[in-house]
Length: 278
Length: 245
Ligand SMILES: Nc1ncnc2c1ncn2[C@@H]1O[C@H](COP(=O)(O)OP(=O)(O)OP(=O)(O)O)[C@@H](O)[C@H]1O
Ligand SMILES: [Mg+2]
Image (tube, rainbow over the protein chains, first blue to last red):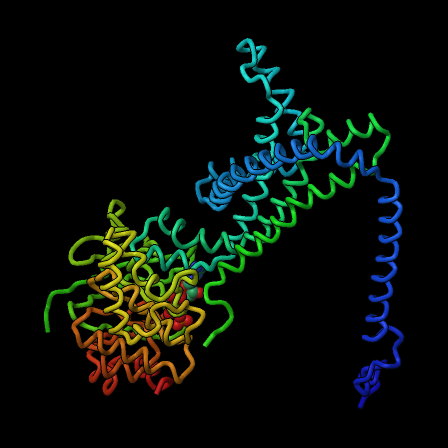
């Protein structure tokens, strides 16, 4: 055997002489996890010790109100961003130059600028333009519609890219088979391509919708009374950051964890016979 | 043999960019006949079939189905495609639909046939291809041979005038080829007009009514199976057969 093949530990198939082997990795992992648990435990102890149970109970109602508002905004943004994203995705795979260019430009803009900037444009910019050209702005509580529109437009771009990727992953032959049966392009898309593209895109869309939930924290900047706004008010009145922080954390996780579970349920449901190939 | 030609290729030319892949091809498939197209890889067999239901566009000539020019720019292609069934080498079943749903989808959506009637007709076609016992299985729970039989059933469900088969057994394990050829043979016996691209020379000889040899984008020789296989006229045909057999 030449020297080239007897290099290092591979010669006799054993790796025990290396310091970084399966055993050390396992032990290191456990050690790091242990240290992390300890640190979190100590931190939690201090936090609970710091927090004021009376204040906690007193602020629950106002945070619940904010929570319901966030849920509503999330539902609105989510429900609107998905059909928008499907159309954007269809535009991105369109062979019609104009449609393709417009949807590409849309995606570039909304993914290329910060959501906070987009919210500012909608919340401050649109009413200013309206007032200059048409007189009084007709919507009195513009913050919430502006929030929903901003989230819809921003996440519509991300959902659109996920759908585009999902369509791209459907084999060419699927469209050909559908068309060869006499289906129109629209029928083939709706019945054959999109259901598969949706399944392919589901994980990415799920991720994006979790981000949408967290993005509601930016709405504090356009005066939406959401969870972070409530935190700031309570904190500045009481100088107690930790009691409201605990509540904010619990309430965000109350949305994001079930949402993640729901997405995994949807994925499991579109298994289509799964791996039990006969 | 009936003289009425159902599918006619009239002097067609097809280019991919600068590559001339079909060169003045003329060919007639008679009603109730099985026309078998053979030829070396890259000779344009798949392209010819794909042009016949406009998955590819031709640059010159005309393809007619029952006298109607389906290559005419104003032809109602969705309508014409319903009359031309196509079966692919890679099955292309819809993975999100069960066997029976694969079969009933187009009749329901394209022809607007009632769900119940579509289901009954679909089940009887699945029966014909020996797959009614797997009606509720998803494609990825089935073997290649089973999938291909469902793909044939799916095309048949539109009640086509002619069926196109593009190397439908080439992707199958050898032991699964027979069950698919059997279905095709039965279909031919019932009088279905078929255009079949295949490398299965045994099938070509037994089931074919007409053999078409293609090479370099041209039809080199056409003949009845017995004459073609026993007494090929052209050098190309002799060469090709000596390599195949
Ligand atoms: N989409 C395409 N773009 C460019 N060239 C193509 C395309 N599809 C096929 N060709 C070329 O056209 C010619 C004919 O291809 P075709 O697939 O029709 O051959 P075939 O006879 O079916 O071969 P095989 O037996 O390998 O399936 C080949 O030279 C091929 O490289
Ligand atoms: Mg081919």
